[in-house]
Each structure stands twice: as C-alpha cells, then as structure tokens.
Amino acid sequence: MSTLTPILSANWDRSDSFTLESYRSTGGYQALRKAVAMEPGALVDLVKASGLRGRGGAGFPTGMKWGFLPKDNPNPRYLVVNADESEPGTCKDIPLMLANPHALIEGVAISAYAINCSQAFIYVRGEVLHVIRRLRHAVAEAYEAGLLGKGILGTAFDLEVVVHSGAGAYICGEETALLDSLEGYRGQPRLKPPFPAVAGLYASPTVVNNVESIASVPSIVDNGADWFTSMGTEKSAGFGFFSLSGHVTRPGQYEAPLGITLRELLDMAGGIRTGHALKFWTPGGSSTPIFTDEHLDTPLDFESVGAAGSMLGTRALQIFDETTCVVRAVGRWIAFYAHESCGKCTPCREGNFWMVQVLDRLENGEGTEADLDKLLDICDNLLGRSFCALGDGAASPVMSSIKYFRQEYIDHVEQGGCPFDHAKSTVWGGGA
Image (cartoon, rainbow, N blue to C red; front, side):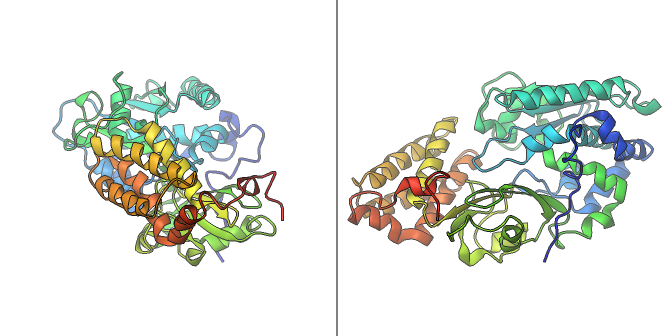
C-alpha cells in the first residue's frame, strides 16, 4: 500500500500557507540560498539525476529540456511557466498556486539561475483572477525580501518575474501557442522545429515548464536527487498530485508517489460514492484514452499507463460510476474541444465539429450504427494529423469509449436515444 507524500501540499492546512512568513517558517527559500552557491551547470545535472519529468502531461525529462538550450546563442534566455491549466478534470496547479505560491516562485528563481536566465514569466489563465492576485502578491513579497530582483541574496544573480494574465483559451496550454499569446499575438501553435529551446519567446532560447514541475525543484535541491528517486518508479521518479473528481466519496488532491494505483487512491478517498460501482475513468484528463474497472491496479506511472493503452497526462482522475452515459460524457468533452480548437489546421477544426454533430445525433436517437464507423474514421484523420496535440487528445476518448463500450453506443441507436436517466449521475439525483 503506497502512502501519501505531502511535500508541495505539506502546509496546505495552515490558514496563512500562502504568505512568505509561513513558507519561510517551514524551510522555504533555503533551497534558493543553497542553489545560488552552486554552479548553474551543477543544478542542471542535479535535476537530470533526479529523473524529474514534466508534470504538465507529456512527461519529458525536465533537466534534459534545460540542457537543450544552445550555448552559443547570443540572445537572452527566458523561463516561461505554463500555468494555463484548463483541461476538463485537470485541477492541480490552481490549488497549488493558491495555497503555496512561494514554492513556485522559489522554483522559478532556482530554475532561472540554473539556465542563466534573468527574465521569467508565469502565464496564468485569465479567468482565475483570484490566483493571479495571490501570485502577484507573493511575487511582491519576494521582491521586498530580496528574493527576486537585483542582486538576489547578495549575489550577482538578477531576476525579473512577470505574472501574465492569459486571454482564456485552452489552446494556450500548448507551449508554442502560449508563447505567441505572451508576445501579444493570437494563441496558435507554431510549426516545429525550431523548438522553443532554440527559438522560443521573442525568437530567443526559452524553457517552458509546468507549474508543478518548477514547484518540485526546490525540494530536489534541498533533499538531493537520491531522495527524489527513492519515491516513484525507476523511470517515473518522485511524487505528484493525483486529482480525484467525479463519483468519489472524497474528491480532492492526493499527493503520492508515481506508480500508486487507482485502487489505492480510492481506498484513501473513501471509494466510489455509496451504493455505486466504478464504470470508467480517465488516468490523465479528458484528452487521454479512458480506462475501466479492469485497470484499477495499473500503476500510475508514465510507462505502465502507456503500456495499458492510455497516458498518465496530468493525473486528472475523473471517476464515473454506472449511472453515467459514456456517449454523453464523451460528447461533452468533444464539444469542449470543438469550441477550443484554434482553427489553424483542417483536421482539428473540421473533425471536432463533425464529431459533435454525430455524437449529438446518437444521444438524441437520430443516429445509426454506421455512425460508429464514421466517428472512428474522423478520429483516424485527427490522430497524428493535426497541427498540435489537441487533435490527438480529442480522438482519444472517442476511440477508447467505442473500444470499451461499443454496445452502449449501439443501444442509443436501437433504443431511439439515450437509455440513461441523466439525473442519476448528478450529485442530487445519484443516491443509492
């Protein structure tokens, strides 16, 4: 039985957890003091040795990404924190920034020092104004304490940090679309190569990392690479947030080692709501292929989830019991992707639009069994053919739901509409 590892969430139960005073009282900014006494290259090597992988979904090794910055480029280097959390089910970065913003700010300072950067940006989704205000307050506290700005901690290290409010578009979670938005353009993905490490923000070398990835850096500097690799699995080291939502007794953030199983997490969360049974779930948010109860014991690490046919993603575990219509749930997700597609490429712009029409037809009893093949055909034209990963993400729940629940789609055709009472899947209509 794996146990919880409260590290980033260790002081969340304090009413003043978001303040500089509270953060420092539990050892905050000691890692920064240790980091600025090291050589930047040694910090990059430390993060490489820790095995920290990106916590934003792709799982790319963080230290390796830092190491891609060209040494002979004369342009300034930039650090950009992707805080544009907006995928259905994904809800870890916002509570982290609310409850413990200084962990992120300390991580920004250490990471910027490691990559020889003097300008960093935290790009936050514009709708979460309360998060933006709290982050800006925390940044102001750090400036006042000499932890940001000129001559940090009495060294020659200078760092300016800007908290940038995004325009509110899911596509801006894609790193190159985020960079376009940060530069003042419409958020649309760029053609790669060149990659951001070579020509990112303002055509200069840029590192783009997720909030949780950067916030994890201070604990690695404080405790060492061996401490970090003692948790998780060989190839998926460390800890992370597992966000349980939906039909679970105690939804919330569970900070645990990678490799924990949903069965173990459900035991901690009080199980599926009383009187019901697990039907399907997402291991990494709505853009990952769904799992069923047969995957309860799949270790939640990058390799095991991939081998089982899905992706770990952002560890957004949306839990659905037997009262949920899978066609309706997938239809809601695809309506989101159709709305949020930037329209730059035809497969995504048209494919998501038409999948919404087909799924609506099925849900309303106007579809045919041929519509299942139509959906799979559209997915085939989306998967690997869209400009960025939004198209792949949209195809994932459709293809996997037909794989596991094909008969449920057919029931919509044969019974002339949705056979489920939608009220039963709600909080107020789902009693035992």
